Length: 260
Image: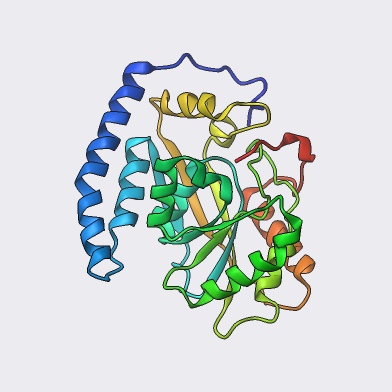
């Protein structure tokens, strides 16, 4: 697998990007009114998940899930490679997400995130960790499983960054019926699409959307982890299982990370 720093950076394919953006607007125009009506009537409905599937397909994403769908009261610990992770996980599992609060700064991404009942937290505000933990704990009564990226940021796609454990306090002690499930996002060409250190987000988007080749990813649902009072041990176990499923080293220096 090539390193992102040495991989050839393809020229921006503006016609392909333009076509994909037009198709995304059409998809949004088709599904948004239906979604608003369903939500207004008090229903949950699958419309938001349809949008994630359709948007991912338009962007070249081809998703396959291996393993059972997660139960409702699940916290999913997922490795983080790209902004495509949201589309992959949303289409494969129908989950909601724990996201950093900066996502709300852009009206479109905020609206899209809100439609998937995203839980926003301030990752950099250590004084609000207790409030974040309580918010996650309350979400176990929600109708969707909840996905968390414990690396806290994206990697270069060739290894894992250290898993952070503080938010796992939300399931110690475990709420009734709770499940802790590691999930390995296994991209066929992870290094080619990863949002790696030093790359502006818009450059990564242009690079990914300029690809003619599909972005293939297998969402591997791993065996649940036994919930205990040792959140650090649970984080290490999730990291080890995901690393084994992906076939590479557990950790990488934090300098490899990029904001996400």
